[in-house]
Length: 240
Image (cartoon, rainbow, N blue to C red):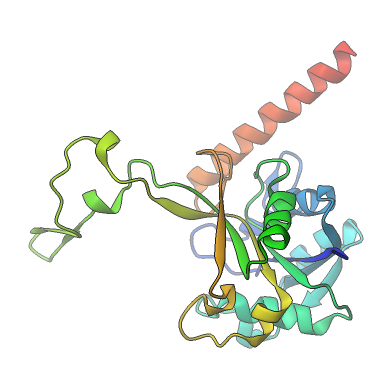
């Protein structure tokens, strides 16, 4: 394996948390934490940031990371993620067989997660590997819909009362996607996620070990985790 190309994606617009990709977090723009994770991965050979935002581009440039400016058509909140990733891959010179997709608004992910995904992809000969975590209390068996008169309609027919009896299910957590260049560039956009191919594998992450920041609450959790980690590092350094 010659090494992967990591594509970090982050646009300037965000409804839930404006400017989230560069909001200060533990003393640095949020995207810098994802760039740190990409740099720490042994399996990543190069990193590129895809964005339309000047502040995001400046944060990447401050770390000497190559920036690909995303066209306006790929900067809306309805533009598919895969289109932005394809644009970035096709805009840079290279032939890396594996593309690692990382979200700029995920500042917390387990150490080794990126390497684990790439190595599983190679060892399994799969089309893609994505990280997942347990759905926890938000299980689809207990989900309902409410109509205009607040009537409850179960999402699925369910006879299970206890959470521990629910069938185990996982949900994508945003930590990492590793996909072959072949699948990424060859797949059509219909159906959604076709770029992940047909042989899709997954890595399960511990609950809470990946923090995907989309709301002020998410940001507060990420800030607490990173500041606690930084405090622990300072204590260890001082003790040494």
